[in-house]
Length: 143
Image 1 (cartoon, rainbow, N blue to C red):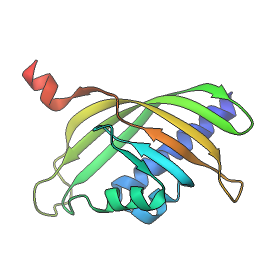
Image 2: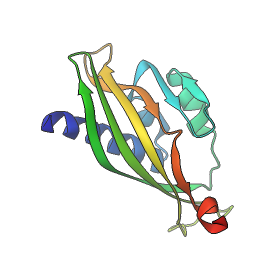
Image 3: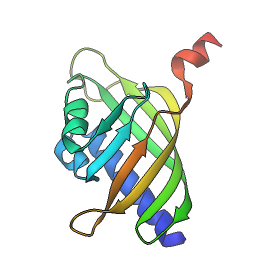
């Protein structure tokens, strides 16, 4: 199980680092051809083209950092690996490009991922579910 947890952790960390660097083409390559991503609004993006359209269409001044932790492999079959994880999100959109951007904690996701072999037999994300937000900064302020 240790190697499966390492595989899942590495793939999730790679995906979100690419997202934070705005390398969207490489980010989308972390998914299988028919991969899907379920977002906070329960919007399901199906296929690489839909995912690329969504992630590349975000604000040019939005800066993010996604921290993946607590990856737990829940099942492992020869064709598919399922895991859960925490994702802490920091974000800022000052309306202008600034380095470094003043990032603030945005929220915590209780995520799920299914990883399968893609057409070239490499492990890739078949389904990413980041729709389950355990806490958001707005909810914490209102509490």
